[in-house]
Length: 232
Ligand SMILES: [Fe+2]
Image 1 (tube, protein in one colour):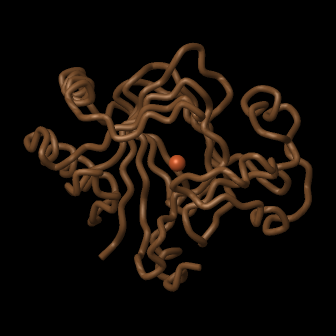
Image 2 (cartoon, protein in one colour):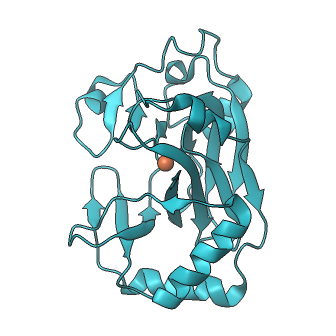
């Protein structure tokens, strides 16, 4: 469990969307950057390609992005895992062909004051579901599927979320519309707080303690960039 939960909670807020966070030029710069970056992970099982924004790439855009983010969320420090070459990173580009399942990105250092997480769509296709429910353990993928629970990955695998939020059945209508890639029993006690319908240039901001996943609705593929932050 995170040690400074009270401090973490002080900086928490409801998730929100910033319209037109980037202009058209800036969107193009991000897409160009993505093409240039070296591959970090090509996960065939989860059908996802990941690239990290190493600080070696496009310093000008880094400064711009960090400053723009500061105007939205105030003081913060970047908190993203290094690249496999050992460079610091501003976050992760993810090109996915399959919906990402329920998880939380709280990190693995319980001494940190984890803060906001951002999602910048670089395709017009995609939906992200943010739940009201929060978790203060380490980065975890929540599942009741034995195969997923025994899978290896960056996140811990667990079903410890069940029982934390009560035993209410998940909303059937929302389930059918967005979440049939999940087992409905894996969503017991969960409540949706925000559904982000991806739009180029917009930015989604939410707390690192918020449970989230993507929706089932991916026609072809989606591309997004996420950053994690902490407070000093
Ligand atoms: Fe995530």
